[in-house]
Image (cartoon, rainbow, N blue to C red; front, side, top):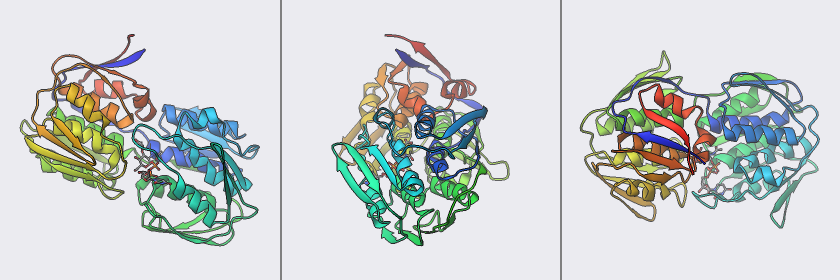
Amino acid sequence: MEKILVKNSLQLRGTVRISGAKNAALPILAAAILGTEDIILEDVPELKDVEIMTEVLKSLGSDVKKIGKNKLIINSKNLNSYVTKYELMSKMRASFLVMGPLLGRLGKTVNSLPGGCNIGSRPIDLHLKGFEALGAVIENNVGDITATAEELIGNKLYLDFPSVGATENIIMAAVLAKGETVIENAAMEPEIVDLANFLRKMGANITGAGTSSIKIKGVAELKGCTHQIIPDRIEAGTFMVAAAITGGDVLVENVISSHMKPIIAKLKETGCDVIEDDENESIRVIGKDVLKAISIKTLPYPGFPTDMQAQFLALMTQLHGNNVAIETVFENRFMHADELNRMNADISVEGKEAIVSGPKRLKGTKVRATDLRAGAALILAGLVAEGDTEISDIYHIDRGYEDIESKFRNLGARIERVDRD
Ligand code: EPZ
């Protein structure tokens, strides 16, 4: 079984170029279903999750071809199915993002109910409520969700929680609906803005993306376009933490610093130097020998991103004092605390709160990635631990990080993928 082996690697130095954002590429790939002409996507990260989404599109009749590194051409003229196969849905819950576009394009969609995952039950009630508000009829037949609509009619709806996926799915269902849709309490993540920009290039009429109130005026059809995926703010944050935790000096390139405000603010609070260069779309992070303890609380954007909580928990093990991390977005996203404690961290978790006392000398051992970001956190911990850290279940990591070992190796990290039972 493949594992990632990390040896003690302090003071990482050098430059790392960030890939396109996984969480922008996935909804944009799903949205490609809505068009009937060629769509060219650039800076598409080459990840397991992107592979699965392209498989889903092909299973529905879309034509998807790779035409270069990180470059795809998609044509959904011959879309011929509205049923997403269980074996694909079960591999990646984000496949659920094809429901909105299928409903919009074909007036029907059948998906197996996406499972939960390690970080939470991941319900989809808000997605379905949005579809019903647009006139769809939802049936739940033993694990399969069917949504049907003779005609989708625009409507005004309020999201009980600013769900990223629900906001994206409803936008994609509304772009071809009759009339105007307004989504109140919408998610404001940069990936929503990228999806809206992509759809507008196809001819959709969307305003307010990036705010809590998004207005979509239905149009008759959507054309082809070319679109470059925005940089991955979570991958960028992961490498910025790597500089901080190893006391290094790393230049992160291809990053939009306005997407990184909470991460920049928190790293500065520890005492790191963080130098933003908007002109060159880069951020330099210089770690220090003594870094101060901090507190974080995850919130929907523009709050501190839940997808950076695990990486910061690893960093907190090296900060001087008592750190507090509060996870408000997912109900079970502290499993990496147990793995870090196996490395001699001192983390106590009580409900939504984790207390991390530092600094602690971490010790390398065998650990398990419990989700995508937890896997990244274990690599960060392995960089500062004494001895070897062997990470299993690394398929989680491959879902969301492109070429992660070579990116870390280029910064001086001693990290390799090994085949071990
Ligand atoms: C997206 O997941 C991201 N995934 C997640 O990234 C990210 O952690 C999350 O947004 C929050 O930022 C993709 O974009 C593919 P949500 P999503 O709907 O859309 C509850 C990663 O590591 N909720 O905003 O599933 C839900 O249970 C992944 O890259 C409902 O209750 O997140 C959760 O507690 C992990 N009902 C909260 O909202 C619903 O209908 C946030 O979920 C939908 C969500």
